[in-house]
Structures are given as C-alpha cells and as structure tokens.
Image 1 (tube, rainbow, N blue to C red):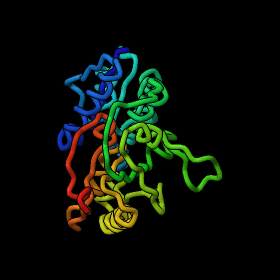
Image 2: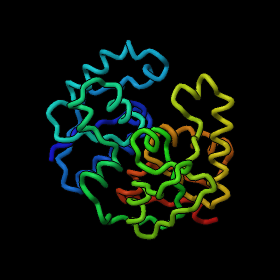
Image 3: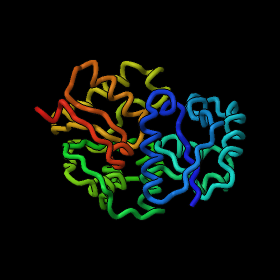
Image 4: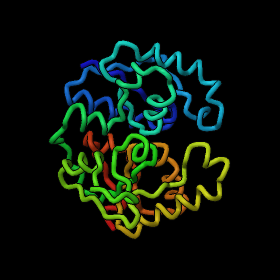
Length: 246
C-alpha cells in the first residue's frame, strides 16, 4: 500500500527523530511510504485560536500534497483529528489515520521485534482519546481499551506502569499553554508527579506536543525521566537511561 507520511510542523522542526522512527516503523511493516516535501502546517494552531477562516491555504495545500495515497498516516492525534474534522474534504479525511490507529486497525499488528527494558508511563493525549477514540475515557462506565497499550504490550522487556489518573490532561492544549500559562504549567506538574510516584523511567505518548510540554517541566525540575514518542519505542530505538540506574 502507498502511504503518505504526514509530519506535524513542530515534529519536523524540533523532533525529526520521531518522523524518522515513524517512517522506519511503517517500512518494516511493508508499507511504501512517501513524504510530500511541500507539506507545511495543517492549520490547527490557527483553528484552535479562532481563526479557522484563515486556514484555506493550508487546507488546499494539504489536499494537493496528499491526493492519491491509499492512506495518510500521522504520528499525532491532534493534527490527525484536525484534518478529519476541519479540512472539509471527506475523501481525504477518511484516509487519514493516527499512527497507533493505523498499526492496530489497518495493519492489525500482532507482534513487534522491539526490546525496551524500562518502566514506561503512557500519557493518553486528549485529542486522541476523546476525539479519535484511541482509548477509553475513565469517566465512562465501559470496558477499558487503549490502542497504544495494545502495541506497547508487544514490546519485549517493557513494563507499563499504573498511573493514579491514567487519562488526565497534561495542560498543553495548543495555544491554551500560551493564553493560560500558569494553569497549563500546574496541570503539567501534576501529570509529571503522577509518573514520578508511579516509577516511570520513560514517559511516552502519541503526541509530541504533549511530550514537549511535559519534557520542559521534567528538565526544569531535573527529574530522572526520559521522554520518547511511541514511534521511537515501537521502532526499537536503543537508549541508555540514567533513570534506569535508579
């Protein structure tokens, strides 16, 4: 199958290793992956700030760049949700998948040749959980499920820690962290401390934006926790962690 790789602008600029891990992971599963070089921001920041009427250029460019692919895959729940709900092109939206969603629902991955001998804390990002339904919301009286957990359970040596509040918001919220800085930071601190108390060595998620927010707090507090995107762990990226020695 031909897959168009949709990489969020902040991943392209600040975390290119996540894009590379996503590419390699998909290629290992037999996908013919293409990266449209002219892709830019999908327009989500403008839409979140109340300026969706100014995203026309982003929408048109996205539709042009990703026309003709069997699937469009993105290592970000928030950007994927924006395309599916706000692009205004149903034919494009129906082919756009968040990475873990694509691996579980389209490729039906049952085993991964990855080894990661650390205690991993999973952050369930809000857009992925409540928008894309990648995991169950704890406030609902319904069976628990998580597509990310399903994939992480296939990684040899990985121990998934149990959090006190497994699906609490980290406080990033896109432009929310700018307009409500103090509240955003405090929410992030609470989220990080849950991981500290639970023994997390590596904090992971499907959205690098949430992880960027949490990593800033971790670094300022000088905490022994490493931050890695799910794609890096699933792809078998080898690391040596100071946290593993504690």
